[in-house]
Each structure stands twice: as C-alpha cells, then as structure tokens.
Amino acid sequence: MGSGIGIGDLRYIPQLAHRSPNRILHSYSCPPILHRIRDHISSKNFRDQRSRRRSELEKLSVLDRIIRDAARFHGHMGPFLVLGVKAGLRAVETLGFNPFEMKAKIITKKSTPYTCFADGVQFTTGCTLGKGNIEIVDGVGLEAVFSLQNRSVELTVKEEILREAENSKEPLEKISLKFMRMSLMELFEEKLI
Ligand SMILES: [Zn+2]
Image 1 (cartoon, rainbow, N blue to C red):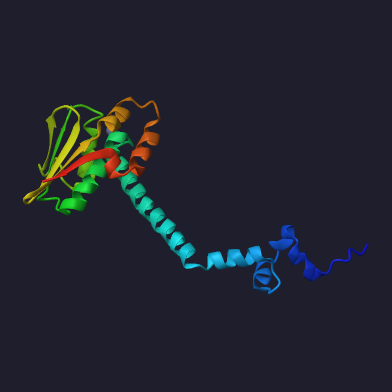
Image 2: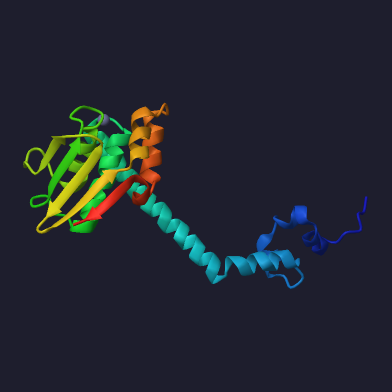
C-alpha cells in the first residue's frame, strides 16, 4: 500500500526525528526547534554550564573520596566524623597544611560520638595523638580551635546542627552525607584570630 510520503518527509515527523539526528540537524529544511537545540548546545552559555556541572561533580568526588577514606580510618561513617573532616579541611584551607606545627584543640564532651569528631580532624590536618598536637578538652557543645604560627581559626558547630547529629533518627550514612554536602556557613560559626 503506497503511503504517498517520501523518505525526505520523514524528518518532519517528530517521532521519527531521532532516527537520523545528524542529517536532520544539518539539513536546511530541519524543523526550527532542532536548530534551536543545535544553537543551544553550541552556545557558550551551555558549554559554561556543562563545565561548571563537571567541576562540581569532580569536587564532590574528591570530597567523597576523603570522607570514604576518613571512614575507613575511623572504622565507620558518622555525622561527628564528617563534621571533624569538614572542620579540619577548613583549618588547612585557612592556615595551611603543616601537620607538625599545627595544633588542634577540641572542646566537647569526652565520650563518643562527640570524640569521633577528633578522628575527622586527625585525618585531614595531620594533627595526631601520636605527635601530641591534638587534645580534647572536656566541655559543652562542639568546638575546635586550630593554631599555626600566630594565627588561629575557631570553628563552633552550630547548635541546630549539633542537635541534629545527636538526635537524628536517620541512618548514620544519610545524615553524614547530608552534612558533607552542606556549606561551612551552614555547619559552623567561624572566627579567625
Ligand atoms: Zn564514630
């Protein structure tokens, strides 16, 4: 049965358009929507967005790796460990990486899970129990003071974040992942001294 439709007309049928995208995209007679898609894909804006998305993914995968290795070091994944990792990374970012000269003081209740924070700090800053440049001081809340030469940074876990870490009924992995993705501003009060 002859349909009366020539092969060249197929490109006008949206359901068939995907069958030969290159031919359609380069055809002078392709539907305007495809021109718009082609223009969009080759636009600077699109390329910028794509490379931003890529570098965000790369950043996350680096963070994912750090957290995974910290969890291996600590023995399990938990929100207090993640808070320690984030605090330690911030200390390194602001003061520099010097695992021999940096000093870390953590002020919190001297019991788990609060002290899990210290392992995140040890892992990221290199301030370790073995070298004696990390100490845990008994106190309330959860605070870390990092010093290097004559500069210090003080990071205090925000009240609502601490409550969430203490009381969340979510699985540990889930809340850990959530904290990992949050910004420093959402997690800590920061003071540079
Ligand atoms: Zn722990």
